[in-house]
Image 1 (cartoon, rainbow, N blue to C red):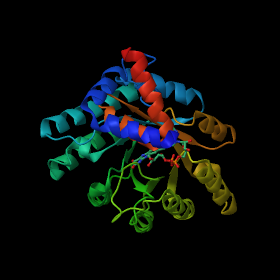
Image 2: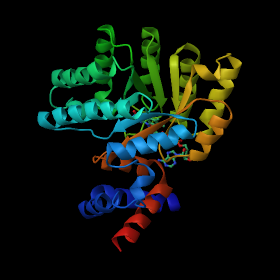
Image 3: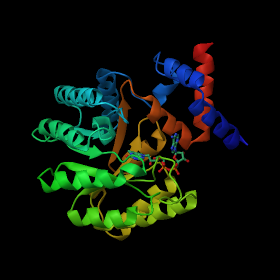
Image 4: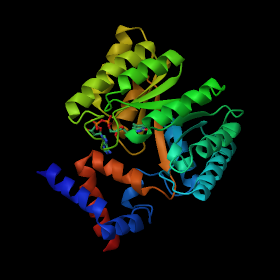
Amino acid sequence: MLASASKIFFHLIARSQTLKKLASRYGMRKPSSFARRFIAGETTAEAIEAARAVEARGMTVTMDLLGEGVTNLDKADAATRDYISVVDAMIASGVGRNISLKLTQLGLDVDKAIAIDNFRKILERTEPAGFFVRIDMENSPYTEVTLEIFETLRRHGSRQIGVVLQSALYRSEDDLGHVNALGARVRLVKGAYKEPKAVAYRKKADVDAAYARMLKTLLTEGHDPAIATHDPAMIALARQVARDHHVAPDRFEFQMLYGVRRDLQAMLVKAGYRVRVYIPFGREWFPYFMRRLGERPANVLFAIRGILRDAG
Ligand SMILES: Cc1cc2nc3c(=O)[nH]c(=O)nc-3n(C[C@H](O)[C@H](O)[C@H](O)COP(=O)(O)OP(=O)(O)OC[C@H]3O[C@@H](n4cnc5c(N)ncnc54)[C@H](O)[C@@H]3O)c2cc1C
């Protein structure tokens, strides 16, 4: 009942321009605004403050300057320059040197060669400074091209980069074998996008079963694996597989999103595991925020309550 009512609200927000405007206007306005549960702030300074708080709790971070689906080269160029300033600010602040980015943010939809060039410009700054750069995985039209760009850059010598594979996609188990064979780093996720059934499992049980299979392969054959999930069953399975196969806790890490299951994050740190928190920030927060609402019905009610409170 709650789930179906929330789904209806979710689709209303996604479709209604007025609700969208209200959510974007009020979501981040005040320190108490509702989108701040998932987004660390609109500025780099706010994100760095959030990163420091996460690090003080014994975890590491990856910083994500939000942005995606850029439709012209000026914006792609601006996003590239913004990312480089974020990198500089991170170096100056002393927070952990790890970022996540999306290739459509750098212009992949407009011109692939320019997106690669923009990515290289960022790598020119991050590589000498010892950063690790994770290329987030977007929806399925971008899977092939994202993996291809990743592999090309690796072949040309970029070693401090990694990819994300989504257990929801049928192809991902093959992709995992391939990326493992390259010796490269994978973050394993379930997948945040609504995909057609031609390419992806539709039932949650199938996505979870694929995640469980991939988790075993990644932990036993992967390189610096990142198990990115808030699902207690998958976390318990990862711990079990690691124990059974003598994979020490310092050979892999759990990853979770800012603002999601802080209780589990703390429990894992206490149990001696490495936990990295993904810290999204920036003015382009709306699509990311909507994906978080879509994942969990209760979040939609939380957002609606926030809109009513802040706009009231
Ligand atoms: C570090 C990190 C990076 C990611 N990068 C990508 C990426 O590059 N590409 C991509 O497609 N996806 C990415 N994702 C998102 C991922 O694909 C899932 O959509 C998301 O993690 C929810 O799935 P789950 O594994 O937590 O399991 P689920 O089965 O969806 O959830 C398990 C439990 O986690 C909690 N939970 C999950 N989501 C939420 C939420 N939004 N709010 C509150 N509680 C929640 C609930 O308690 C839920 O019962 C990333 C996730 C993480 C943690």
